[in-house]
Length: 219
Image (cartoon, rainbow, N blue to C red; front, side):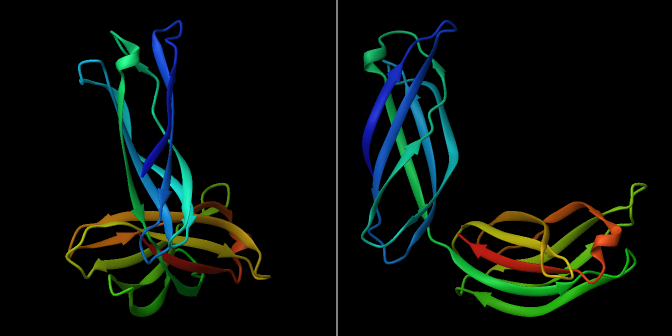
């Protein structure tokens, strides 16, 4: 990563200094980069922390060998002393993505039942999927229903997996989209978790003959 811009403005009337930080990133890997997480530490003239930001996400798509420019978030910060001696420590983590279509499941007929997807597969040799189920709540007084998907996954590797995300899309009987939601979790080495995206406030009558489409992404 090469920092291309690092400037400040202020302080303003509240004593806060604002920053503009950007960097260019070359993808030197053999994979497409589809997510970047940045951190930024603002140090005063003595090299002591004054403020910063971390785990900020940037959605990108950088092909192998290509270069892109990103903005790095640095929040307003109060700094005493010589502003011209401020330093910024910026880091970026680059992630590739493995995408998998889990499938389509019918919406349960009522809140006493669930429907399931009997699929046990590995994604990229890193994550094992133990199927999925769809549950629906009892209708509220307003006749609205919440749908929840439960997808079980396990990290098959000794590496930390930053994120496993599951996207659910509710489709009506004419295949038009009603609602969508995405849930995600991190996975420690050789550990398991359950990811539960939910869609709320769907009118009961609209769920007749509906289906849920599920997909999974591993970063």
